[in-house]
Amino acid sequence: MKKFVSNNPEESKKFAQDFAEKILAEKCAENGALVLALVGDLGSGKTTFARVFAEALGVKEKVKSPTFIIFRKSKLVDKKWQEKRFEHFYHFDVYRVHDEKEILNLGWEEIISDHKNIVLVEWADKIKNILPGNCVKINFKHLRGDKREVEIA
Ligand code: ADP
Ligand code: MG
Image (cartoon, rainbow, N blue to C red):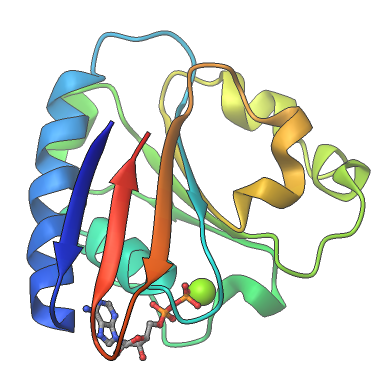
């Protein structure tokens, strides 16, 4: 369990970037996809974190949030990631999902069992029954003003 308190968006971005580098190096050899489960209220910083994480992978995400499309799949073009086994980045936002079946029907089991995938899920508590046991849980909290807490569980 590791807690970080950020005082402004810039600090949060720096944290997300450092975290991305660390976790990607650390989880290189594990089986199945690398699944990051982001949990926290609206405005607590999940999307900010997701964007920086994507950027660290060399993915430029469009402004449109995946809230409206459930997920976005991006190919990792940088050879560096392929050498490290990763080929695709999935950014899910399951805010509007009411039934885990909706996600299962998108080929979820296949996505999370593929060793080449990095799968980040915003509002992951909505699909907690279908998250893999080895997923990395990240809790976001809106403290006061611009203060945000990020906890890696
Ligand atoms: P979520 O996806 O959890 O709803 P977002 O990342 O979309 O949250 O929104 C966080 C909002 O809070 C953004 O408008 C961002 O500019 C603002 N913000 C203010 N302070 C911070 C901080 N310390 N860290 C992250 N975001 C912050
Ligand atoms: Mg969001």
